[in-house]
Image 1 (cartoon, one colour):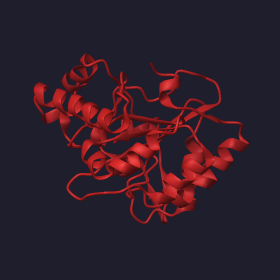
Image 2: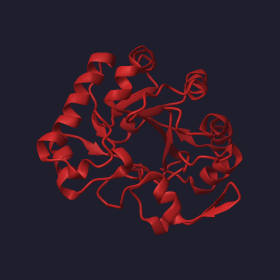
Image 3: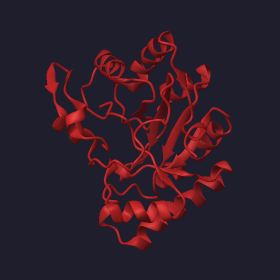
Length: 237
């Protein structure tokens, strides 16, 4: 899931190995395009904390350490939720959506990692059917979309935008799907890269291996820098 140039990623020492742009990109997939939103439209000290809640063949559940921390701290957050994940986590998703600081957005129905290979009708169904499902569970319609694995083409991007959506990815890859990543390494990387207007991305489905342990330190340091966390929909309409 990568929507910025691989060159912009640079490199980071993770688990004793220097991971450069190519390896970080491989952890997230995808390709770069300028017309996908990767930065908040502000120069103020605001940051969007976003999480992907998704699954493919294996059922997944919410990472309780992350959820409990976000709720306890009442941190404005945006969750991009896929339909399969929503079906398996209906009660927890409904409870989370009841908090006014939690925004629920669209991450496709089946989380097919190559929507660019789908025909136009199938792409539209992935978005519209997932919106209907999420509305059934949460009582809210979605307005923002994130492509699974960050893979898309101009054609499927146009399909999604024709449904009234803005596509939002992230400013840089956090690398949290990398197995063996230690919390301190994740914390250092994210804090080094985060700037005013950054859109941060992590996983809340148990696939962010170090995120639950790293998140409190990341948030504490950003708060020390006078960063204000915002929901995406507060700045992106």
